[in-house]
Image 1 (cartoon, rainbow, N blue to C red):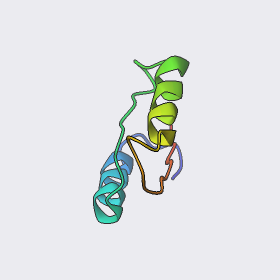
Image 2 (cartoon, rainbow, N blue to C red):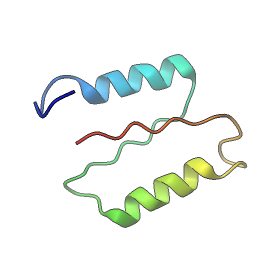
Image 3 (tube, one colour):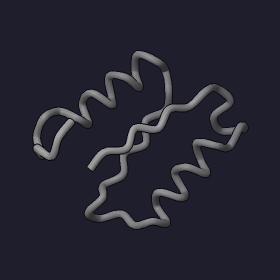
Length: 60
C-alpha cells in the first residue's frame, strides 16, 4: 500500500478480520519490539486459542 502513513491500513485489516471472523491483533511498530511480534505469532499459532485458520497482515 505504499509508504503513506494515513491511508486506512488498520481499518482495512479490521474489516478483513471482522468479515473472516479471524482474531485481530494490533501491534504498533514504534512502541512494540520483536518480542511482541513473536508473542502474537505464538498466540495465533496456538490451536487451543485459535483453532481456525489464520491470516497475517504485516505492513509498516
